[in-house]
Image 1: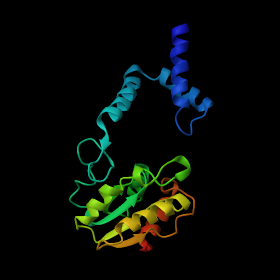
Image 2: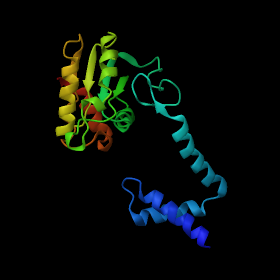
Image 3: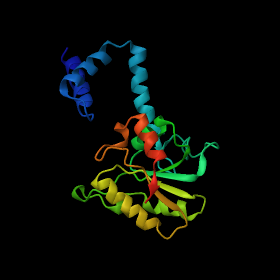
Image 4: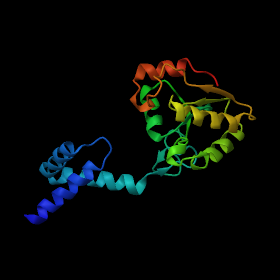
Length: 199
């Protein structure tokens, strides 16, 4: 019995370490897993293992991919003249769920956060500049979070791209200042794309 309690405690601790999961929710999740049929629980564990072992950043845009490139970069139906620059993969996923944007993406892998020690050198800016320099894009949409750090990140991106022959635009402020893209609803994201403006 002590071993089982130890295993449950470890599972509760693991769930509690996840962002947004409190101790009570972690306990409910752990006991839910305990009560799952064996095949279902092992399938859940296998899904976690597969994510950790098989997913890597796309070599082109830094989205998550199971191969060298993600499904967005390899999709021939995407508009390869539009590039939306976002901070994180979860921002890309939020925009994709809105369903109004059909171009390509570039994930910066973060944003400027000087108080956390994150500067421009921590972002995938060199790859972004190389992609845009290759000349296939006519417009680069700055899709950073509308807050102080996101705006500072957008300014750095704009500075790095200013001498390249592309139009720089910014998502419209239909997005609430300080809100993250992943929290925006579909209508807000559709309006933000439709109302984008020159940066």
